[in-house]
Structure formats: structure tokens, C-alpha cells
Length: 67
Length: 361
Image (cartoon, rainbow over all chains, first blue to last red; front, side, top):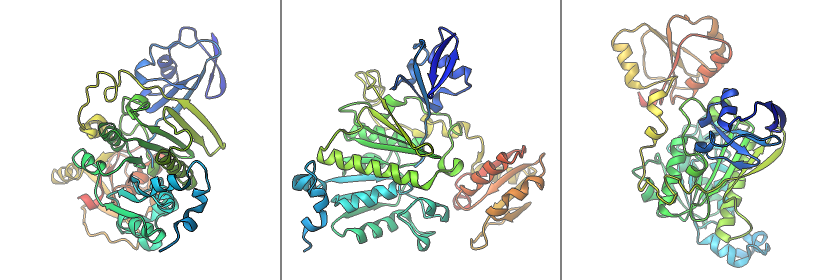
């Protein structure tokens, strides 16, 4: 296990977990959110190619259209 | 003639704006898409600042439930065209501003033609199809899209300018499935957040016009009013972006309903034609007409009864769980709200909302 920060809180996740894997574990549909790794928005098509390391900060924001 | 220095001195005193900046503001043309929660403060602040040409496009009329946040309108405006009222209000605030009111829906047919009259577009719309359409039309016309979006207590803002940074498609290339992301009408929104975020948008517009400061190009500002915190994220331009990337495949406007899979997956909505077919086939359904005392309801439906929005919660124990229930209201918003409310109360029966309401029936 490694420890990351998920929306500001410590979270233990398995090693070699991709950002897409993290969303799947949390049952979050990737098209409904904005995912940022260390404050950089990650393109949806890259989520399966980026793997988490210990100490990473991940923010998951809702992708919304309200006005 | 009014002395312009008196009127605009608080802007002119700012060294980042000054007389030159004010003249730029005066000769600028800004289109606001959506005259709702974000569009209201945007229109008011841009008009107050003396933006020479303001376009505002919206096909909606003022509903009493809009007054909680849409500060362009008041009690007397309910039932009237939003853009007509907006035009009146803006002209009253600043008669030097020329307002173009477009009482129509922004579509892939009219967008480029409307956009060509403006050098900046502010996206204050309320759905994904329009947001992708605005972005694409802005990129194709080479103008910036000052974008913002709100949800419950949160707001997000960015400036998408493909010439200098990311566009909306770089930010989020794949549209979410319909119904997977609730709208303001469904999830609720605190009125003041639309004021905060719409004002940030207005500030961004004025910065772009005058060249003051650092715009939100390539950055996403996230504002959480529940905990009063902000966060800032970087948005990278995607060199493979289908719209603004090096080998872009999108050269003209698309079908945005298709792109957002609107008709494919809409789970809780039923179109007027689908309802007519159900009624023609004498399918066993219950129709609930949501209509308040002061509203006029002209249509008659079989096997139906009328309730006011305030009494929806009492339906939970009255509805037959084995029967499909179709909620019908004038514009198709209260019906969505009714379904949401009954779902929250734990009602498990099948429910549909008549899309577009009786207005479109």
C-alpha cells in the first residue's frame, strides 16, 4: 500500500494503481469528473496511463455545467 | 452629455485600466450566452463598466424559481422573455451600452453567425451541449471563451483561449453521459455563488479587454463557498486535441446533442411524442400535472390529477408503485424537481418527466 492525498485527506491505496483504477475503486464515472494530480488537470484520455506514487495529491472535482 | 470621467473614474484611476483601457471597454463587443444565475451579474457588471456592445442570448422566460439567484429579474418579470427584460434593465443602468437581445436557442446553425459580431464570449449557459458548442464556435472564430459553471455551493472558472492555451475540449474531451451530472434545477444551488462566479467572469472579461493582469488562461479556479476555500489547477493545452490540436479533426460545428448523447440515454425524460404514443396505445400510466393555483393549465390528460409543487411530497404514499408515473408541468423543470424529490423520499416506482413541458406538447 502507498499513501496519497485524495481531496486533501490521507488515503491508502494499492501500489501500481492508475488514476483510472482509483476512480473505478471509488465507483466514480471518469466522464463526470475533473481529475487533477498535484494540481495539474489530467486529460481524460491519460487517466489509465498515469500511476500513483506515494505522496501524490489527487483532487477529484465534479464536472458541472450549471449556470 | 454626461462626463465620462465622472461616471467611470473608479476604473480610470486604476493604472491597469486608465483612459486607454476604458476606451477599449467602450469599443468592445461581448456576447453572454445564458441570462440566468451567471449571466445576471455578468450582464450588470459589464454594462456598468461601459462595455459598448453587449449581446445576450437565451430562449427562456423568467420563472418564479429563477428569482432566488437571477438578479436581473424581479417579481413583475415572471412569465416574460429573459433577454427582453435583460435589455431593458441594462439600458436603464447604462444608456451608452448597445444591447442585442437574441430570444433564441444557441444552435450549431446560428452560432457562428452570431459570434462573428463579438470579440469575446462569456459562457453562462446551463448544459453541456451548449458549452461544447460555445467552445467550438469560439475556437473556429479565434476568440476567447470566458467559461464558468456552478453546482450547489461550488463554482469553477477558466478562460479558454486556444490561441494562448487550452480550450474546453483540452480540459474535458469526453462529454458526460446525460443524467450522470445533475443541473442546478435538480441539485440546488446557493444563489450567491452564481453572483460570485458570474462576477469573476465579468472581471476576466474586463481583464481580457484591457490587457490588465493575468487572465485564467490555462488555469482552473475552483471556489467552494461551503468551506470558503479556493483552489487553482493548471490546464495543459492538448496537442492532440480534436479541435485545437496540431492535427485537429473538427473543422466545423458538430451535432452537440449527439456528442452529449442526449437522446440516447435520457433516463427520466419522456418526449411529447413518446407520451402521445403511450396514450394512443392506452398504456396504463398515471399522469401528474404540476400546476400552482396561479398558473393556467390548458391541456387535459386522461387518468391524471393536478397537484401544486408544494404538495409533491405527499404523493409518495399515494402513487401506485407498479404504474409508470409521468410528471407534467409547463416547462419541464418542476417535473424533474418532483422526480428528484420523490426519489430522495425513497419512492421506488418508475417516473418520467415530460421533456420541455406542456409548452412543447
